Image 1 (cartoon, rainbow, N blue to C red):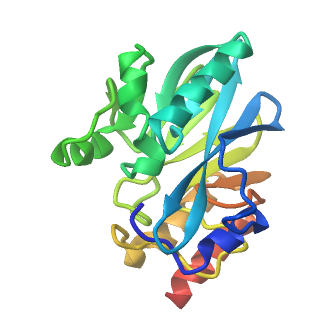
Image 2 (cartoon, one colour):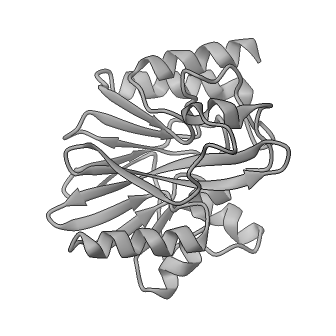
Amino acid sequence: MKLLLPLLFFLLNGCTSKDIDRSLQIKAIDEDVYLHTSFKIIEGYGWVGSNGLVVVINQQAVIIDTPWSEQDTAELLSWIAAQNLTVVASISTHFHDDRTAGIGLLNAKSVPTYTSLFTDEILTSKGLPTASHVFTGDHVLMFNERLEIYYPGEGHSSDNLVVWLPHNQLLFGGCLVRPLAWQSLGFTGDANVAQWADSINNIQSKFPVIDKVVPGHGEMGDAAILSHTIDLVGKH
């Protein structure tokens, strides 16, 4: 992620750059679901937090989006091991480094990594580490349907995916969705703003009952985040 909206770091968790604990943060947000938040300093904006998940399925851990650095990815692996869990997969929801920075390290540690074919092609074109596994199709079920990976269309990026956890009625919207505190779409350098709202509408049609929504940055909320994102697209 190259640019974010002005003063964004004041909006993330209500913190200024002086207030933020910049170490990797991990907390439980639902049954067998943990939120990991890593931080990176963005020139002109201070420290910005990036969200991902750890989903536990039968004592196995699935990482949804790597932390924002290899160091934080290594720390996340250590935390997972301390919970007596085995990492069986990491899934990155688009090509930006707030989703993929740990892929190379995970590959080196023989952790299976996954992206869409679309994301794989972008990472390859940029000379960046690519996942060890690639999936195709707009709707992919994994781990006995505990995870549903869905491509709703372009928005924040051409390859952005969301991950649905039906057991928890929880949507990981990644950077395709924007938290209620934001009053801008943020970085749109790789966006397709013209299709963004349609992609959110596709999510609402695909998953009509959503209890929790986790955005790529900022505070989690409920399905109102989806409508809020559509409103922001209309104001762009």
